Every structure is written in structure tokens, then in C-alpha cells.
Amino acid sequence: MWYEIIPSFMIVTAAFGVPGWGLYHIHNLTLGNHFRRSLHSRWDRHMYQRDLRLTGNPYNVNVS
Image 1 (tube, rainbow, N blue to C red):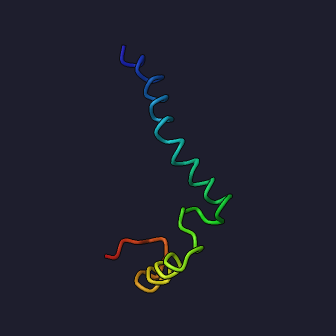
Image 2 (cartoon, rainbow, N blue to C red; image 1 turned 60 degrees about the vertical axis):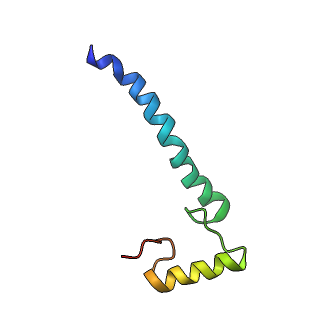
């Protein structure tokens, strides 16, 4: 029947969803922000300031 696919669907959904969700929180614990971007090198600080100046949000890199 159609409902026999539900356990397999949940396993596949969890396999794709949990790593992204987990990395979001691991980055918060290790880097202090929810994104992988850090300010250790001069280039990263420059790009952070550029994005802040262009968009007002340094983590929103889409300019529209």
C-alpha cells in the first residue's frame, strides 16, 4: 500500500536534513555564529565589511 513508503521516506528525509541542521548548530557552538564565515584572515574581514556595506547584513550575500 501507499503508506509502506513512509518509513523509507522519513529515513531519506532525515539523512538529507540532519547534517545541514546539525552544522548550523555546530557552527554556532564553535564559531559563535550560525554561519561558517569567520574573521580570522584579513581577506575574510574585508569581505565581511564589504557585504555589510552593500547589503546591511554581512550574512546576506545576495544583492537585489
